[in-house]
Amino acid sequence: MPKRASGARRRGRRQVRGTWPVLVLFLPPALLLFTVFVILPMGEAAWYSLYNWNGYGLPTQWIGLRNYELIFNNGAFRQALINNGLIILVSLVVQVPLALWLATLVTHRIKGAVMFRLLFFLPYVLADVAAGMIWRFVYDGQFGLVAGVFGALGMEAPFWLADRDVAFYAVLGVIVWKYFGFHMMLFVAGLQGIDKSVLEAADIDGATGWQKFFRVTLPLLGSTVRLSVFFAVVGSLQLFDMIMPLTGGGPSNSTQTMVTFLYTFGVMRMQVGFGSAVGVVLFVICVTLALGYKRIFMKND
Image (cartoon, rainbow, N blue to C red; front, side, top):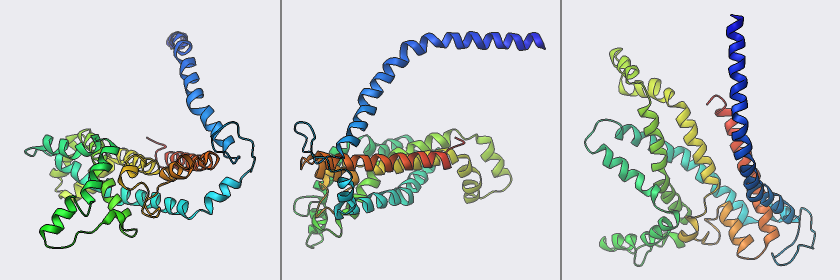
């Protein structure tokens, strides 16, 4: 027994020595790139957020936390926060359950299952900017698909994207259409990893379809569901590419998200100090939610 223990220790020391060349070769370049392109820009953004600066020359007009005060007193930013919260809610209540339901359908040995997987996943493959432009044409009340449908019914077509009370709901529909395919493929992978003998045992015990789903399939998909929810939350906070060509944050800032707010009020208006403060706030929110979620719900995954 002592000989076995000493042999295991020697093998462990050899493995450790064997990893040092790899660490020395690959770790410094990775740390350098991470520092230059992530850590330094984050520090600069935090520093610039304390100035009233338009991006030209060096920042000189120190205003302390005034930019942060302006952010939380800004009605458009509060609307952006609400919109991000609604996107997260719709993603969790509609998008993820829809993806799970479709995943259970296309994993069965039904005719055309592969075709349906491709069809449902196709919107996610489409670039966000392209999707926004396509749906802007679809919603167009004069020349788009909505105009054609209402015209065929003999009705006047609405301009949903120009209606402050309706525009964001139209955006939510596009978000569900665009991203549910990604979550569906996650669930398809998870369902394919479930041992079929477990489901066969449930059939032998006389379990109904709903009982198998809620008492066997769903618990075994626990880690996949938690991962899907994590992606849905983080992705909802970072939504930008599709909003800009679709609505540009309008009308009257009713469809702004935190990232589009940063771009509109920080970049387009050359208020770099203010935009940096928005970026810091967004970073803190994303990191807090991500780390908190992983610590609470994904600690065993």
